[in-house]
Each structure stands twice: as structure tokens, then as C-alpha cells.
Length: 195
Image: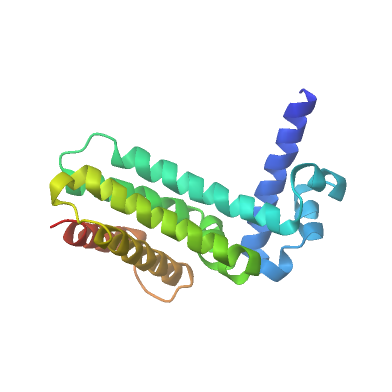
């Protein structure tokens, strides 16, 4: 391996360790020391890739957000019989990332709101997803899509509601399956994002 490849490998190990420790131990337990121990790397290597613990945690949350965005958009733009099927595929991909690996759900939806420096970042990410929902609704429904600012308002309500459903599932507060979350979210999207 080249020096760059070794550095990339160490960064990937730190991100995986950050995901594991942040999800299992929360913000207080996700110290730089704990993350380095999980990754089996020294602090010297930590600073090779990250400026601080919060920088690493932000990178972990961003990686989950990027995975969700890519999976949902790929699913949305894959062949489907109708618009509702496209929407269902996208929402399934979104929910699957957060529920198949509960660590990703916990980090992106729960633990990130417990870290002061990540709270604003999380809200910005939610707004970005809301804008994405509005933009994709315009692509799907054309002239029948809601106009601005109604489409962004509806997008934020949709993303906020979906996030809260996933949080309730992750915390075992509701007795539903991920597929029931997908069903409810699909009905909501189809019913509210166009005229």
C-alpha cells in the first residue's frame, strides 16, 4: 500500500470506530481516546485525518447522510411502474440505511442532536433533505407539484415526520416494522407533495 492508501485506510478505520463508539456510548462516551482504542490507532493518526473529536463525529454523520441520499436517489430513479412505486423504492432505501444498521440510525437521528456542535449541522442536513424532497416532487409531478414555498414546507414536514418515526422505532417506542414506516411515509408523500 502507498502512503496515501495507508492514510485512507486509517481514516476509514477511525470513521468506523467513530460510528461504533458514538452509537454505543453516545456523545459522552465518544471520546477521542475511546475512538482511537476502537480503531487500534494512536492519537497521532487521529490528527492525520481530523482536527477534533467533533470533526470526526460530523464526518460520521455526513457519511450516513451521503449514503442515505445516494441510496434514495438511485432507488427513485430506477425503473418503476408508476410514481408511487418510485417513491416507495426511494423511501425504502432511506429507511433501510437507518434500520438495517441501527448504529447509523442512532448516530444520524439521535446522538447527533446531543452534541452542541452537531445540532446545527443536523438541522441544516434536515433542511437539505427537505429541499431534495421538494425538488424531486417537482421532477415527479411537474406542473402538478406544489409551488414554493409550499413545496419546501411540505418537504420539511415530510422529512421531520419520517425522522421522528425512525427515532421512535430505534428507541422501541412504537411497535411497528420498517416496512410499515415505509408504507405510511409513501402514503404521506403521495398525498401531500402535489395538487
